[in-house]
Amino acid sequence: METVVAFKEWETVCEALADGRQAIILRKGGIHEGRAGFSFAHAGFFLFPTRFHGQADKVRELQQQPALPEWQPGDIIPLTHYAEAVWARTLTNPADLAALEPFHIWTPETVRERFDWEGKGMASGSIHCALVRIYQLDEPWPLEYGRNLAGCRSWVEVAEPPAGWRERLAPVLGDGAFATLAARLGEVVPAGS
Image 1 (tube, rainbow, N blue to C red):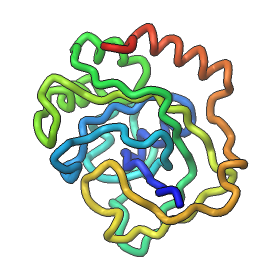
Image 2 (cartoon, rainbow, N blue to C red):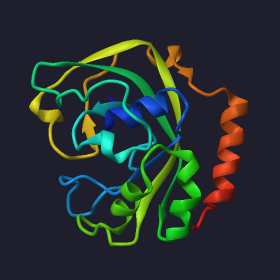
Image 3 (tube, rainbow, N blue to C red):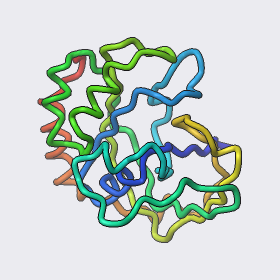
């Protein structure tokens, strides 16, 4: 049986990915990533929205609703989107950060802070970037939050999703729009950057 994983990301970023305003993920890693540090180790994953870390101050878009408390054991988290990583790169050139600014909602300060952070297998002056294609599930998949999903880490194993879920995925961006975006991003951050 295939291991099913979810990627923990700020709820505000999950919303931007879900409605097509963003198609990249920038990640340094969580506190509990292990000695090797973070990597985009999975080609496909569910988006797991988190609510901590003062998100409103770290994104360029104002929040329309008040911040909600982080999930507690027993809460039901509606997983609504699945992502497929098209490519992943480790960026070491600060100029790439500025070039990517139109493609995400984080503030420049937030991205630079992550780029400069050192620890957990990552050197200062680097950040991981992945282009992801986002798909909406036909109906939310309720996932019960437990201690096994807690903590500052990027990847969590989750239960087996409902049968037939893959066949009912709908891309957030159509093929043409996504191909155009992927081409633009490939020019901004070419392979080997």
